[in-house]
Length: 336
Picture 1 (cartoon, rainbow, N blue to C red):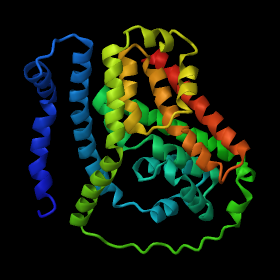
Picture 2 (picture 1 turned 180 degrees about the vertical axis):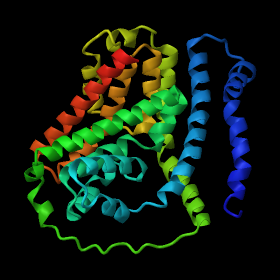
Picture 3 (picture 1 turned 45 degrees about the vertical axis):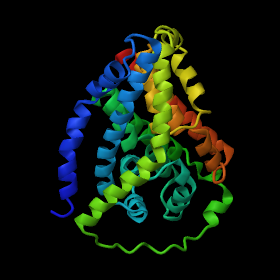
């Protein structure tokens, strides 16, 4: 009871607040500030005041739950789960583990080295490295909050398919020779972490800590992303982006990917912008392709991986993932 008391008290407050956010935003804009409805600045501020607390509330709830779930996972457990798996089954398991494990592109090198030391195939390792930053609770919460659960599930499913097939392709072509020579000369001197039993109360504390750590790091990206999105919502003409990146233009998806790759952002920063792209007429497939390219093919991650991979493998990684994203973009442009 000790661990559940505070969450049990806060949950009803969360529900009441969340379901009345639109009324709160309208009250601030219409009654307190007395701004004229329909004006560019008015609708920009209304969007911002509504979306920031909405996204923050969703993040706190989901990150708390995932933080408890993640207390059951460690790096050692992840590596152990992947050892000895056949190529395709390993790709599937690695991609699924990537969703629930707390790793991002900044962890790419230590994770890559740890997996190689454990004898995990290169293709399986890449499935994990693609899935971990691209499919996580932040992306799921933001997508569900801004677009609904249907789009969120679509994103997760297609992200998994890309991670599984890209890793399988890389593994199938035996590209270990394009890993930097020094990587295989490393001998693991790390002792396995001793499993330590913790109570459920301690797991709840880890949930609180996850909220503090993750929201503390990404809140500024959320505010900036929503601010950019709010500006576009209020000022960008309805048909401008739609005419450029609408599904009737065959080049929309490749162009979105080319724009996305050099950019650097996480899900928290890019999804509010994607929301406005769709609102302004950009097709769903093109918007998802843009988002995936920013998160899965970010320039900083490519630079980091250059320290352990030769350019041939990096080029293959970029090419395979980009082709997968293009296919997903075209499919959803013509299906949705």
